Length: 67
Image (tube, rainbow, N blue to C red; front, top):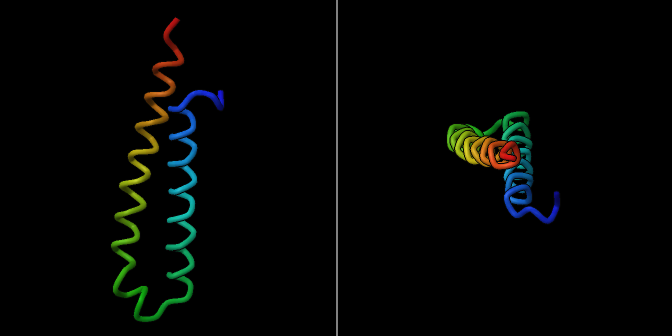
């Protein structure tokens, strides 16, 4: 499974989503001017990367289900 490049890319994308999510939660909890300026940008980045991660997972499942 780890030798499949699509699996590796999907796993990396999931970890990037997690990192962005944790960063966003941290800035939200801290508050302040940085959060006011960048909260929406951080959420957009997370949604974009999350879309890519979901597409990679669907592609991986689709390719794995073929006989």
